[in-house]
Amino acid sequence: MSSRHSNRSGIVLRRHVTTGGDVILTLLTPHGKLKAIARGGARGVLQSRLNLFQHIALQTYATPRSDLPTVQQVTLEGALPRLADPARYGYAHLMAELADALYQEGEHTEMAFDLFSGALRGISHHADPEWVALVMGFKLLILAGFVPRAVTCARCGKPDPAHPDVLTGHLVCASCAELPALAPDVVAFLRDVPRETVRTLMERPLRGERRQSLWRALERFVGLHVGEVRSWRGLPHEAMQAV
Amino acid sequence: MKYPPSLVALIRELSRLPGIGPKSAQRLAFHLFEQPREDIERLAGALLDAKRELQMCKRCFNITDRELCDVCTDPGRDRAQICVVEEPGDVIAIERSGEYRGLYHVLHGAISPMNGVSPEKLYIKPLLGRLRGDDNDVVRRPEDFEVILATSTTVEGEATSLYLQRLLEPLGTTVSRIAYGLPVGGALEYADEVTLGRALAGRQRVTK
Image (cartoon, rainbow over all chains, first blue to last red; front, side):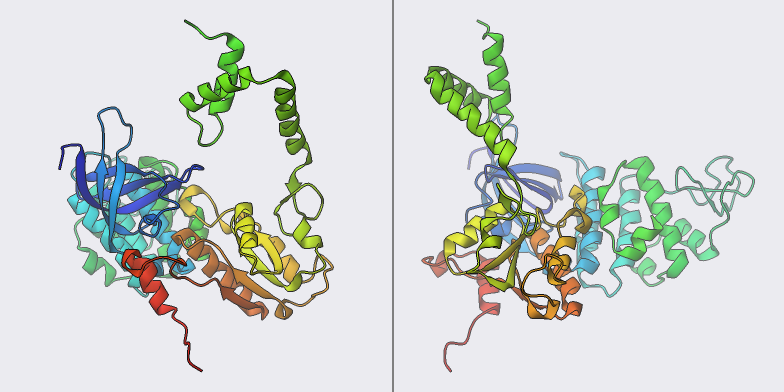
């Protein structure tokens, strides 16, 4: 096989069908993000393997002058059809959009790939997909280097802050705060999320108003570090009210 | 050598069309230049007429040149069946099959939060209106209708279909989904695993 050929395996983060019937894919692979074009992919035999959130292995061909490598062969490695469920669909989009924004092409992203695939599996199978999305949303941000400051005040450095910062989603102390303090378990979650495992965090779900506080914190944090995320509006009603 | 400004403008406009790259636009521009003036005027007239005349059908949101499209005004259609599709092109595809004699409803997209397409951006509300008899059609009650969900089998199409299913079920409307399966004339050996799996899951009994 020539050096212009490459074999990769990844999860489809985005798929855009051009009017000519080509499919432009963005995948998250263990070796970074990958963009490729499947010529005639919306019509041919490949079409069912090029769906959103599917784990695929693909062979691409790139010439030095081509903008995007061309997909030549695709095999399906895994699909999560339950992600089309309206109660799960919006969360899967949020994870994909975050992963797309946070990780770049050519970057070694093996841990991000594992985290993202775990997030999709959790959203697909777990009884509480909203909590999976919250935990994994924070974890994806933290892995990319964006850690919410919750141990010391984000403005003056005093210990044990408990108030949300309107702009950044970090925590600030009472003297720097403009908003009322968060509930102690919300503060504890924000403090624990960088160091605790996903399993431990999943065992301590927050509910009701506390969960909404976390959505607001995540939205502010994402707004500052990632920028505009269109999937917020696709979240199921309760989560959307919070943001 | 530089092209004359009018030719550059023509190439630029042509290359804005979907599926037309700069090279194709250049070829088209030279082809148009070689055509007789009356042919060009006819083409320009057709473009302007289409832009002026075409609109969305007030009832089903298909493309038409009148207030209601040919399908909605056809008295021979089964008015208790509404086939929901994503795009106007899907109506043509189903019509070509010759197997369907009901009405249509075009959503103009599928739910895709990361692309900013929420249910409110699709023509779902008018569909609910049709089921309640807002368009003064013969069939008046939601439970008298069958809605056939013919959105695509992508994740986006499936999500839209499931969303509509949950929205319509409480109204008492009969909701069905088009079948998944193998293409007619295709060899099993070359079918992809997803389609084959769906075809097996949706198998039909052939003995009585």
